[in-house]
Image 1 (cartoon, protein in one colour):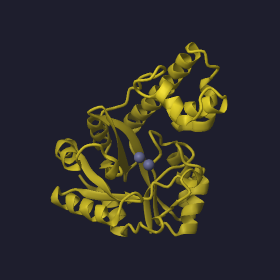
Image 2: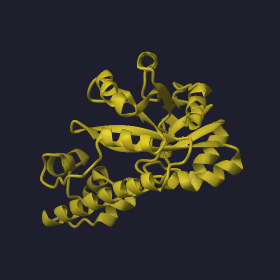
Image 3: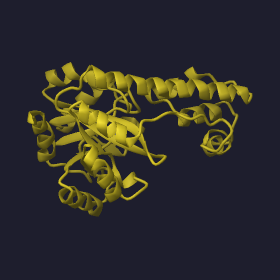
Image 4: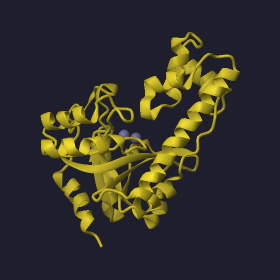
Length: 277
Ligand SMILES: [Zn+2]
Ligand SMILES: [Zn+2]
């Protein structure tokens, strides 16, 4: 069994890297990728633990990018771990997230709310964003519910919204490619536009794969994505998008009600990539 899309508590999952490796052993996952959002911190900690446990760990990441103003998640896989240049760029992404949160807290303060960035960060850790601010507002009785927090304050057109600089999908693809990685469109079922259009625009820039297997996908969607990958001569990737207790219905390796069975060949094709010259 393999699972190439999982999150540790260094982004928005609930398990520590050690617990995630232990869960992989329990579930019988032989090849695992930790794809935390904009961070290698969980992967880095998991490397020696996975080695000792006999789990093959593929270096991965999930980047938040923008295409035509809409959010697109992009997976990057690195059969050979990426160098300092790419890692420095990833650190910058974390700094822009932190900066945005500081500005958001300041804006809420201006509007008369007693909310500190640390309170949101206590909930969101390395992935702190607007939902965590909404939760703090709710807990302090400033809003009726989370929807109210977004409608009135946090949505893009609302009073407290502050912009966050996210890389374009194009930049994400190019950076991953330059660092020797394989870029893959995550959960294509959540894309806003047509997948074909995205593939046609991004393939020439180095997009090499799409995530055909994912817990969100219906069987019909998976086969459609497999066909598309074949038509465009692309690789496929797959994973459960495991978040531990944050999304308890999704299981490591097997997805939602066992709806996931990712062939071992998917991982082998990515790992073989390291021999590319
Ligand atoms: Zn995602
Ligand atoms: Zn994910």
